[in-house]
Image 1 (cartoon, rainbow, N blue to C red):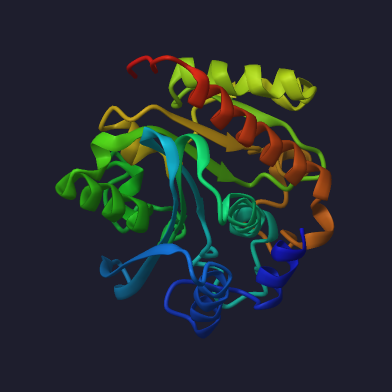
Image 2: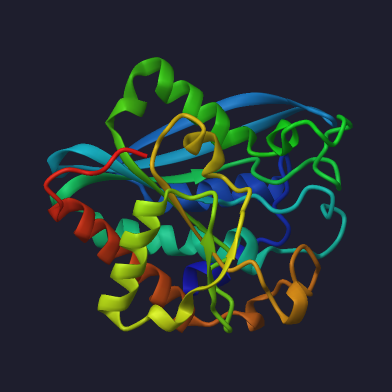
Length: 280
């Protein structure tokens, strides 16, 4: 939770802003000395060319294969001229990944290697996410710039074949935590997540609702990578805080971060013990 507070303290961090660069430096400073990959490129957006910076921290395991845990860290671009700080939306999950880095640092992990990904330019540039395109076009035409670029890069260099599972954290700090059962995620992996939550005694915070979530995992799902999205998409009564200046730290709970973090770690442990993983 302290990491979340420190990230939010930088203020709004939309793509291309000075605060965005400060958060990049903040994340990289905490990963100093580790195996860190920087995926930097320029995205062609409806607002022109904007710099994008994905940060990947790699931690080796005892088994061949990789589990990716991802979180976006940018804030909503259309709200860039407001006080929107994305405490839950971008902040909560990015802080959680920093704590995972602390847990994994300096040891060889039992099971698969873990790659932590702070992906950039997740948020849409246009308010409706269309990028000025017809609404029947895929939503990722004007969002998910960073994670889509990273997926394509990994497909080209062969890394994609190593990925056994893609776990996404997004909006996981809500004090009233209810993680969705995402119909766009991989069913067998969602079952593993629920088993992990049950083993930890947290099952009451998972899967009360089923919905289709369009999020950072979709580019990987489209190429057959098993994926699960840890997201609570009802932030405040009737989702009243989402993408508003009310998305502030006081709406979050350290317990929610603990529940999601512990369940993710148990999911990784279960996957590492399985003899083989099912296909998508």
